[in-house]
Image (cartoon, rainbow, N blue to C red; front, side, top):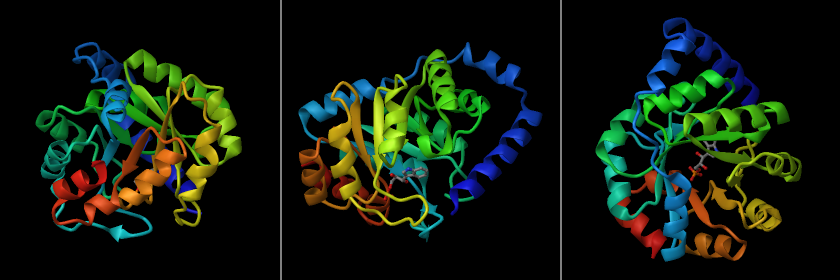
Amino acid sequence: MILPRILARKHEEVDAARSQVPLAELGARVADLAPCRPFRVRLKECAARGTAVIAEVKKGSPSKGVIRADFDPVAIAGAYERGGAACLSVLTDRDFFFGELAYLGMIRNAVALPLLRKDFIVDAYQLHEARVAGADAVLLIAAALDGGQLADFSYLAAELGLEVLLEIHDEEELRRALETPAALIGVNNRNLSTFVTDLRISERLLPLIPPQRLRVTESGIHDRLDIERLKDAGADAFLIGESLMRETDIEAKLKSLID
Ligand SMILES: O=P(O)(O)OC[C@@H](O)[C@@H](O)c1c[nH]c2ccccc12
């Protein structure tokens, strides 16, 4: 299973980053930042008008390797914005997903959409780092965090002005998610040990999420048929990476998913 390996590596990265820029210094920078862009409100508006897609800037993954060789994160973000994305997800993990923290700032300067930092958060330091780098929201993964961490990180994120997308994969994780104030809950259709995606995970779990929480379905979404099927299961928003990144015309593909 790869998740424990990724998490162990994250702790090393955080230690290295902290020795370069201490938490107190990062914290001091937060005070000077512009307010975050409203992630959840934007999703709700797009969902009310049609289909709310969180489009992911993703060069590759541990299971697929490099998905898109000619990878220009800013150009991709622009195509997503023109194609009608509600919000963007930016993979910032370098070692397993070919991402960079700096992509957040570059993309923030180029598009007006709210941005999610997609990474493996294991330490409060990374929440400050996300805010300073230009994120408006962060992913928290229930499979990677215990109940105390989920609560602590949720409250700290809110203090920093960041919204939280809390990712779950089964009933036990959902139960823990519902004990936190997370306004956005994401059901990952991908099994993190086998990498197999199965939309039936969302069909099983989305109906168990109270409608006051915004229900996001993540991974393995390919076409309009998948979207209709997931809407029927109660999805309010759709997090899509690979099927967009494999297209030559990203903007046209996104439009075909939304209409
Ligand atoms: O590329 P896909 O199958 O459309 O999936 C996107 C997104 O859901 C996936 O990248 C993801 C979901 N949860 C994660 C956690 C970490 C890294 C990546 C992810």
